[in-house]
Image (tube, rainbow, N blue to C red):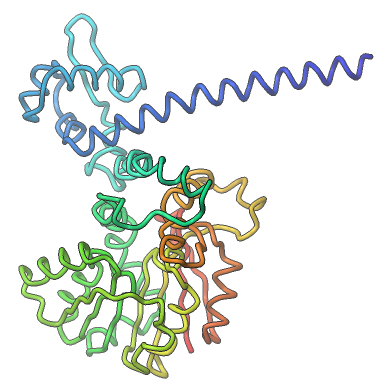
Length: 362
């Protein structure tokens, strides 16, 4: 009887703790939605480093509607993000918060808050897929490439020359001398633009399935006068057969392989397209293929939600494998070996808790 009573109390305590967690999560979800809006409208940037402001003054500063600004401020005060002086009716974004939510700090975490509403817009489609199968196509994600460009701007672009390319020590010298470079799944191509500008002797090519992303990239490259850079909208499901043999000295993928309809075919195509002394540099999500080993992952639950709501489903929409965001190191190594890479090194970078970096050689 005593044991049963104790178990009942343990279950009650566990239920109470879980209830508290869920209520906290609801509040935090609301904070993330308001953070996304604050980022997109410029409210957070306008408050960073500014003196305390009334809702009217903040609305004037940002050119936004005061009634919406006032309600947003109320939500951010309730979330503990913004501080209010009730006597003056003024609002302030503390500097320690501004350093994490605007470009004043090293990393703007408000960028990642945008994933929550972006994924939410396809919830009805995802529920249908749970019941009927299939997937949600890229076209349904109206801001995907815009948000991913901001994301990569903090994880890839800021570290590209000082940390990522030096993972293969000879790369910088070879790029300066002039080599052929391909970025697979290039999105808006910002990494390629940076490299093409820095290394004018090298030739750069970007492939992506999205016409929208490629169109944006081409326009930017023209405006920058980058004549050593070419973008092409291309379906890579048959890349293992259609890749030009030995056409490139360096191939890169940044957070792209797990989205592919046929990831192994893409990897085999990358291997086929590399010269004998070529290098494949890949950034992809750091995780374990075994679910139970992701319990301590700092972003595990969030990244699995990204997988269900985007990465897995866009692959399935193409009739693909649906590998998913959290395919993990074990699966990545298995696929890279199967693609023909005899040497695979895995690196972690201090600034990036989300990704692994692979240096693969034939």
